Image (cartoon, rainbow, N blue to C red; front, top):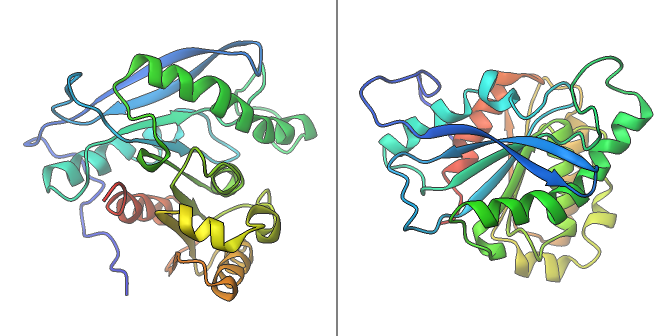
Length: 255
């Protein structure tokens, strides 16, 4: 059984050390312009150390700020750091809509915007990860790199993470959306996938009308004997679920 987050886990605490949150820009050769991402450095960050990195993705209605504004990402992790429950890591929140105008405006389901979420795989692998590794003291090995996200970002995390296990050993999907590709496509070789993954996390609220997407992936993984965590929690397709998922998932990373 997995216990939900304790009360106050997402509330700001004055009496602890807080990490630094900053906005960066990087050159995207995939899109052809400069793009933004937000970076959270752990409390007591030191440029003399080397850190693992988590790429944390937003949903269809968000951008690089969504996890910080609505998900209390830095607050949740800073509280966990203060309680010595997670490994120090650098968290990068990119914009998963890889197109020139990447703002979440207009018809979010327009075909070009959906294609932009698919295009983000190239932007992440070819542009953002190299930029982060050139600017921050992050480890450059797959075992020290994680990807996770909510809804559309959950689907991206499965699509990108499982198809690029040379880049990621830790993959998490919170309430994965219909952009999630079939598990047969994502995992053509179950034995190889099992040997390469350090953690595969799937979670969804029990009142979420998209739960069948995650449940189908879970069933395939179970049938193929691929180690993973399946967490069906109380809630819908909303922030209380995703905050709780971040709280639980982050504690299992890089250990």
